[in-house]
Length: 287
Image 1 (cartoon, rainbow, N blue to C red):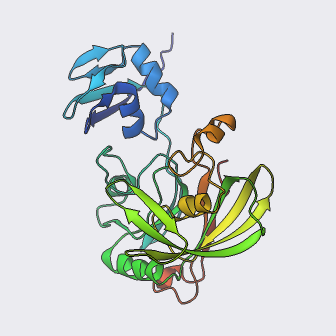
Image 2: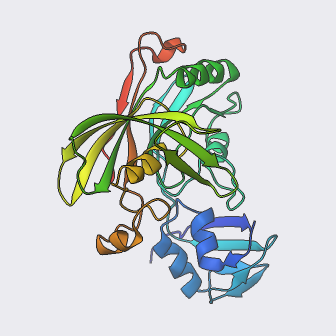
Image 3: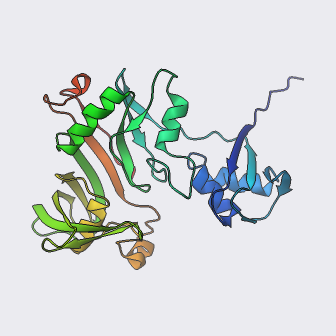
């Protein structure tokens, strides 16, 4: 009789904040299917501080959690890589860099995946719930060149999103002002300049119009939560947005995640990073 070798994947985390076991594991292991996490709990393949558990127990900072599963973690797709940078398709649910609630993020992933001669640097960010294209520099000179390109709005950034209603006119470039409340983790859009505000410029084109519309959005400025807050300010919040959006509508349309994806990055011939000059990268949104 032939026996196939069963290989279990082992995942270990150290808890950073109070919370229940399942929600903590889903936050810390965003590349592992939630169904695999729930199955591991049911089959007692999760240990908290060395003890097997079968209930969704509360956790405290410093607790150690081990999970064993036959399931494989999702991979972060890599679209392009050279000596200067790597371009990935970031799944929703992963933060760009460190936050208080989770230890896993794009930067730590890059540190684990790239060879020892590379030192990854973030040159721009996507929200945790936003999926799509991100470029990561692999050394300091590339970081400086790409950071300058993003700062000078030399990188073409396009997004696809789904919103409530349909904007009129169907094509537009809208300018307003934005203030940021760092403590609350939110921003606010204003009709005119106010103290501490920064200008935001958002260009949009309706791809499919209806009660729920699909938009192509190009950013001329890159502010925190710009698309989410600006579209909500214009009366067309994004589906799946529980911060700036309509929670009742999200339930009606069963939008359990943010319908926003960074679908294109374009680097002009004047890009400071020579190896990216003239290159274009695009993906289809996952919704």
